[in-house]
Length: 179
View 1 (cartoon, rainbow, N blue to C red):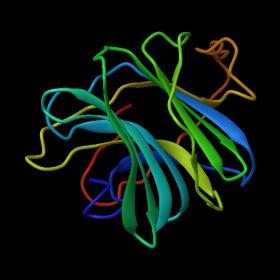
View 2: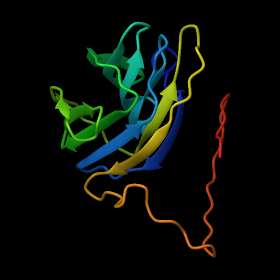
View 3: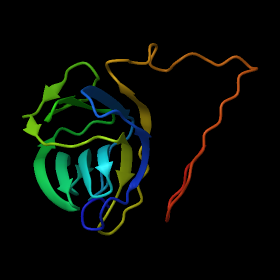
């Protein structure tokens, strides 16, 4: 839940420079039960951040955006959109101006009205969550990247057999990371 309980949803974050950027995420999952959600977090710290996501109100899929200042939330966008098994979210930052776009095909983007918010960005990433009756929810993230420096091809290249990489994860509270 990223509302009443603060900023405690399951998320994967990475350090981000406090500069202009455009990030994009592709979800291969769709929230269908009330208060299931998946989206982007842009953090200054645990009390000051932006939440931009898709969530289900139990009947419709909605696009949502909120800012948190000192832990207090303010809704910026909350509009119903057409359901889709593939959901793309793109966020552009130019100074203190933020523009949110979404698509169901990764090509035909729908831009929403921009909003202004001063934020010293320290990290950005994706999150998944639920609240209320806590319906179980698994978000499937295909990719997350900076469109100014995209991964081409999007699925990357296969690693050579002699290459190994490590991923370190930590779980705070309840949750799991599946390999």
